[in-house]
Length: 442
Ligand code: SF4
Image (cartoon, rainbow, N blue to C red; front, side, top):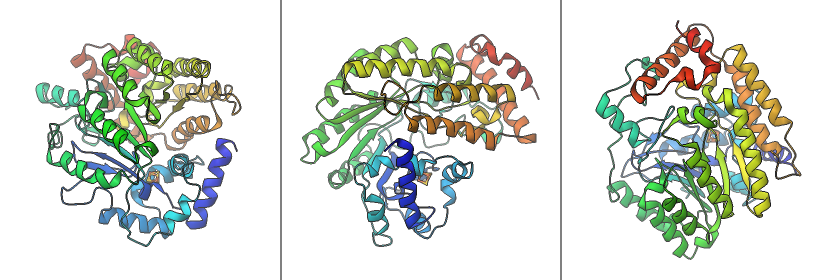
């Protein structure tokens, strides 16, 4: 069955329950202990975690689960409904294989649970803290300690309109739970004693998880637990850490079940380094090679944003090269995922003009010419469907009128402030967008 046929099958199974069913609401949990926040997937706005509340089975989440069973579209899942209304495959379908490939009956089993049942997640994405050496454009103070330090020392980016100011101001969450042994972390180490019996995957994120000692402590806990052999251990990383840390994680993961590293990059070369400030592409690539050499599965996580467009073809070519290399090494997979960046709006691809939209269409076309489900050195139809979704989303939802003017002004203000604070030069780095920058003057 091709990835697309598999998506059709998931949709059929969902529709037998309801048109708004999503197993992630039960089986998936993403939580960030440092800022005390969680959500069921990264497309849903985060909620505060209370110390005296269950990590996963909150009253609010139970209500949303019931809406899904009743065929109501929960408003917090608007990312999916917008994708579906644009005729695309939404994440409730494209992320479901994480669960359905482990248990083909999971959709029916989940829907048959008693209403309001307490469940443990099967897939856990989590961060212990926000320690990170990068300041990616679309990140902010509550996910990156470097962003936090910059704003604490140099003040907020007050050139950005109110609507877009999240991340450019301190919000009080950044220092809620710090250090390796805070109350939220203690709550986690108690919770994981039971949760470990139910998990099939743990995925560490950050900040940069390879900078946290707790990442290695958790890997050791999983390795030594009787159920550990059933749990896949995955790590997100910006791959801009020392050789020593990369070698340590390879050493830690290599005997665990299906180790996988999700490496984040949204373009290639100097443009990628501008988007993710602090990224060094040569270091990223050196570490990528180490992972491929060690036969660790690698997923490239591309948060597709407006600045990705000009040089994304180079990234697609790099990925094709690495797919080939992984195949030569044998046994490991190398794949691309392309969630589109929704926030902050002034960096999203929705600010595009016709020229860059045409460039995006060409990128999608280019990828389409390299799709073959029977050749692991090419993109598969699932990877293509996700990238095509970006285009469909942009075509359907492009900003217009006053909203467009506002977000483009914010884009220019962001670039000016970025260049001033960080010593970068947008026009030199993105000569293809000089005309666009000038156009954003209001
Ligand atoms: S946003 Fe989509 S994938 Fe995420 S929980 Fe909601 S329906 Fe599921």
